[in-house]
Length: 127
Image 1 (cartoon, rainbow, N blue to C red):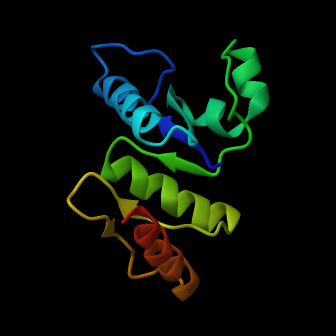
Image 2: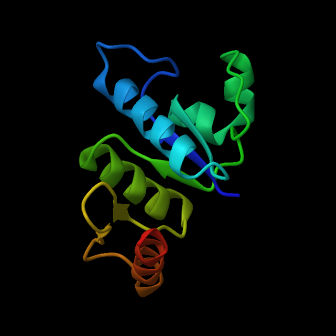
C-alpha cells in the first residue's frame, strides 16, 4: 500500500503550529476512510525521506525513508518542495490539491508533459 507522509516542521502535535494540527487531522481522517493506506504525520521532511534522520530524532516511523508521497501544509511550501525536487533531483512529480469536492490538478507552466500526465493520473485516482 502507498506510504504517505503529512508534512509539518515537527513530529508532534502542537496547538501553536497549525500545520501539525492539520497533519494530525488528515492522518486521522485517512486512517478511518482508507485503512490500507500507510499514512503518518505530522512528520518533518527529513524524517519522512530519510530513515537515519528519524532514528537520530528517535521517531518511530514505518514509512521513514520509503515514502511514496508527501502532503504539504500549504501551497507555498508545496511549490517550493515540488520545484526543488524537479530541478535539483530530476524527480518525477505529480501535483494535486485535495479537500475540494473534486481533486484539483495543479501544474506549472514549466512542468514537463510527463509530470502533467502524472498529475492527471493522480487526480483521477482520487475521484
